[in-house]
Amino acid sequence: MARRKRQPTVFDYMVRKVGFRKTLKILTFVMAWATVENEFGREPSIEEYADWWRSSRATAFREQALFRECFPNEATPSRLTALAMERVGRADLIGFQQVEFA
Image 1 (cartoon, rainbow, N blue to C red):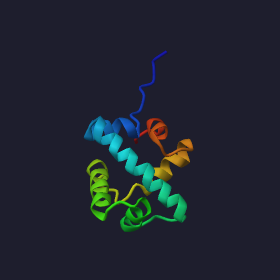
Image 2 (image 1 turned 45 degrees about the horizontal axis):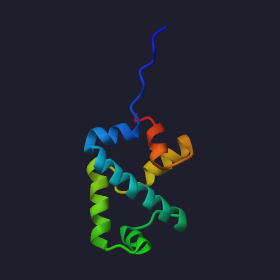
Image 3 (image 1 turned 120 degrees about the vertical axis):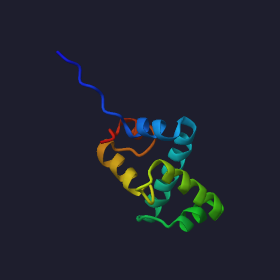
Image 4 (image 1 turned 30 degrees about the horizontal axis):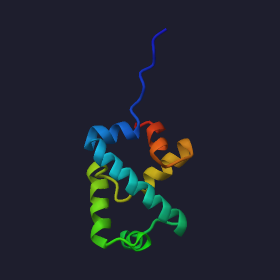
């Protein structure tokens, strides 16, 4: 019986696209974003995100720019975190290692 080829995960895609170190930075931003989004009950603005974490706007924009380097068609991580939650019930490092990228 032929073995089914494993589909690449979101994590695999990220590592191939930007490398391991940047992937970890992006995932940190994604999880931090999801925390604020969960607290607000809606998608926050980048300014609200910065205020929540008590970071500068410049830092928040750098984090978002790194995210967009990997996902240029996404303005924020909201859609990806929702997808991970829907498919595997978690939007963290483990979740992104399980969600297949299609």
